[in-house]
Structures are given as structure tokens and as C-alpha cells.
Length: 209
Figure: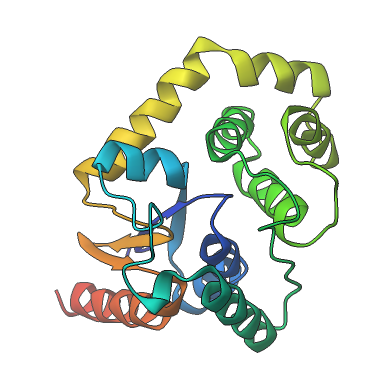
């Protein structure tokens, strides 16, 4: 029986993507699933969809920054992982991070680099996480700095960033993190339990064939 697959759409500029990413290895180990990582920019996704719940007054308390910080801190405590909210601490650049992850993926280090960049944004205490720190993080996962910088600026990287964005939009992705299992979409770090359930149910259906 082939392993089930999960498409994981995430943004380095998304606190809940970081939290979910810390559980991916556990999810894969428990279910035998193969997880396909698809990096995006949260801001670009919302711009292309023409819907941004963070523009103007929050439509509900769920989108209040104070609530989101406290909620993320609670999830981090539950998971036992470090968390430092970046809001008010560093300026985030989602489009750059998406490009950087895609570049790392083209060089064979997508997951390791994504976790390293998540660490820069949500764990460490840098003064900034812009182009040069992104390049420096590449070196920490074994990528040569010069080659990574060239890949970051390459037209093929631009094309792949756009291709992933189109794939997400076509799949109905409206926020991050999003997980897709056998065509079913699950949005949010708190849906991981449902993702796990869907994977096990899918495995049972395949085994019964």
C-alpha cells in the first residue's frame, strides 16, 4: 500500500504555520504519510484572493493581534516548543521568505531550511530577518551562500513561487497553514487532529480495497 500524502501549505510569516510545522515529523511518523511542503506568502495569498481579514478593524476577536499572540503562546506551551511573537519586534517579509524557501527547495533542503527560517522569525532574537539573514540561514543547513543567493534571484525561482501560489488558489487555500488530504482541505494548526484522522481513515479505506 502506498503511503498517503498531505499537501502542507505554509508561510514563514504565519505563527500558526510555525506551530504546525513543529508537529509535521510526529504526524508523518504516526500515520506513515508523506508530507509535501508548499511555501507561500500569507500577504500575497490574501492579496491575490482579494480578501484580507487583517485590513482595517478585525472582523472578530479571532483576528485581534493580542488574542493571536496569547493563543499562539498557549499552543507553543502545549507543544513544548519555543515561541517569540515577531509583531513589534522584527519586520516580516513574507514574499522574500517564500522565495527563499523555494530556492532552498530547488537546492534540496526545503524542510530543513524552512525550519531554520521559522527559527529566525519565531525563536531567535535577531534585529532583522531580511535578505542577508535569509542567506545566512541557508549556510546553517549546508547550502553554499553564493549558490543560494543566485538561486534566490533566479527567474526559475520566481516562476516556481508563482506556480505554488496558483496551485494553492486552485485548491481553495484561503489561509495558512492549510493541509489537503485526498482532496479534503483543513485550515489551521488546530485542525491537525482532523488531518491525522483523515489520514488514518484514508489508510483504512485503501486497505479494504
